[in-house]
Length: 349
Image (cartoon, rainbow, N blue to C red; front, side, top):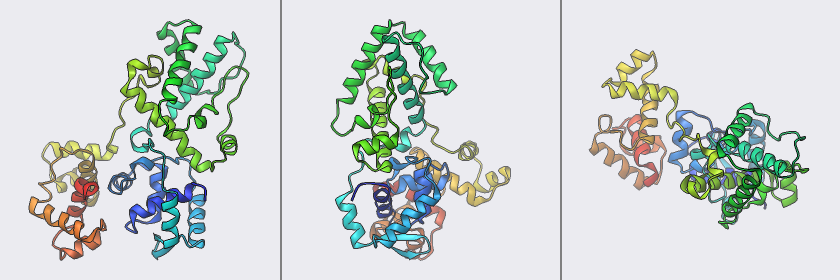
């Protein structure tokens, strides 16, 4: 069985283990910027898959699920919650190797611009060295075109030095690791009298499922970003692709506002009243904050003794399901408190 979206879904289901509906996976793969999706990505160790399929349609996703169920790879446990069958588990074990450098959560905000800039720079460089000025740019995004103009002006390199340096850096970067497949990127590059292949054409050429090709492609992109950011002096030309890169804002906009209120000493009820929101919504924000800021104290909301009770229950039950944990503790703790402890310690229990 080829590795495709089905394997990605099986892998995600295996980690979630019926504790979320199938649509939590859909929102994760699409990269939905909601507190719940962000929390799920971290709690179930699925950050690598965040926004790896931004254009995934709901109908195709549901069709893939139906096929998995029809082939007896998964079984329905309750409404929209599924579990792997023995057959599905065996399939996953035999096809469980996902791209090593895939890091959707960390690089989803820059991956598109990085590719657009790289592909245009390669095309322009190739035509410059061949003295060709009449060609259609592979990218027509005005921001990317402006970036290229500014970058070429700042580099102050001859066309020969630019192309030689760019080629050298690409070869060093792309040949430095056996856990990436440079072909999935290189085959899409355009140059002098050459138009790069489309993703579908690359998939056919390499005999890879298109949905898995997307992961392999992002694996190369994310590897390059990581490599360049950690070795900027080694890549004096390529580092310009990330010259204006800033780490993505971790918190959603609404949670950021709540964080400011908390910093000023407001209680949950006071923030809810000031923002005209439900207290449950403010609690969602606090869980998101705790998840992303390890220095944020959760003791004002969950006493240390209660934290230990929740952690012990999680270890005993091997579950992150809120209802199960709360029932185990005799309903003496709130769902909010359990979620806070999950946010702070869930990945390490």
